[in-house]
Image (cartoon, rainbow, N blue to C red; front, side, top):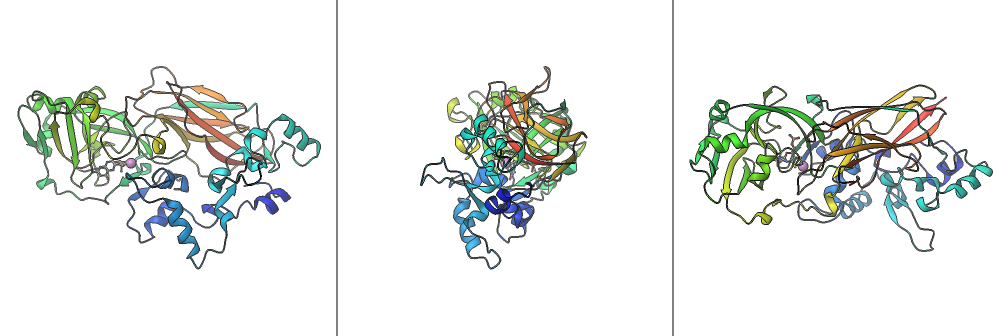
Amino acid sequence: MLPANTYNEAFVNAGSRGCGSCHGDLGLLMENSGLNHIKIEGEYGKQVTIADCLPCHRQHWVGAGPYYGDMLHERHYSSDSFDGNCWSCHAQDSSGEVGEYQWELWDEYKYTASLGGFPEDYFDDRVKGWLQQRGSSATGSMANMSLDAEPQLDVSLSQDVLDEEDVFVLNNYGTLEVDVTQWGLNVTGVNEEKTLTLQDLQALPQTEMTVTQVCYTSAINSPFAANIPMKGVLLSDVIEACGGLAGGTNTFALAGADGWATAYIIDFMVQNNAMIALEYFGHPLTADQGYPATLVIPGMPGAPWVKHIVALSGLEQPAEALVNSYALRSDGVTSHKANSAWFQSDGVTAKAGEPLELAGYGFAWSGTDLIAPLATISFSFDYGATWHDVPIPEGADPYQWSTFTATWTPQAPGTYMAWVKATNADGFEQEQPSGLFVVVEE
Ligand SMILES: Nc1nc2c(c(=O)[nH]1)N[C@H]1C(S)=C(S)[C@@H](COP(=O)(O)O)O[C@H]1N2
Ligand SMILES: [Mo]
């Protein structure tokens, strides 16, 4: 994607580094690997990249899998077809101190201003001016990245549903085919404990809503998000149909037929319109969607939504113990409470003077608390020196993502880094912007 200058070819060796230089879609790679990996499918034409692996495998932790560095180093060194070296996958981003070498993934480094030869702090006007004077770059970056500080940008927002064929699938235990004649939803901790059949649920009041689902471990620039129209029975209606909560019951332990389990405070779920969904996109759920019923908690990421739900088991618990009782941690690993992404994978080309449409979405969520709604989606074409902020209109549904179409008309040819980031109403920004290389031709 970078201009063919000496710096990029001889020093950076761009194009021969990172997962994409040897592999295609890493989701497919995992599926064909023979490993018993969870089923993941990224969608809308966007490839699954190493960024999607990182939330679970950046380190050893109980909720996910082994540290990918341990596995991938060994896998590559034991491979007959890998003839690269450390720098095939990594970049060094030193602070300029001798010995202060920071190993980074090339696939993350390539989106930063450091690619131009300087750590971000040094990427200032003096350095840019010096480079411009020496003619090594028109833009002040040794990688010859072009900057657009005053982008001609027109952004429109909406809250469209995603095409169903583009919805991601994430099964932690593989696809489960449920025999509905054997299936029932067992409700306890209520005045009339019972097991509801699918017909029982269909006979209760049906409610329709549209809710964004995003995998808890969704990465920056991840394809694991979808806005889904659904229909089913509100949890409050299920409780009412069971004669109300028995005294003391404040929590439901939720169990899926495949063993997936979480627990949530009932007030929290009811306030957020939790629903036993029986239909997505106007039809009964498919096996991958959780047939015959999925418990949906609007405002919460995907993991607490329980597909193939078979039990709402009432518990009396101290409130603070069970806000978030599943195994995922809420620190570090999955702390980005706002996120946005491009639909495209890297490799977009455009023509100078002609409008280019960049599409993506923004959403905001929290793993442990009520959601702070998405407030702003911001764009930058000069590594964040200037941001173009687009506020989410008042009245937008906080349980649904906002999709954007950003129409950018680049004025001059060159290679640009488009950045987008989301900020929620608490001012919480996503951890790092989502980046996209755009090559603008004459
Ligand atoms: N029964 C069951 N429910 C589940 C899961 C699962 O593996 N089994 N995965 C969870 C996770 S981690 C996510 S992100 C969403 C994914 O839902 P989808 O496949 O419909 O997109 O389902 C959640 N509910
Ligand atoms: Mo997930």
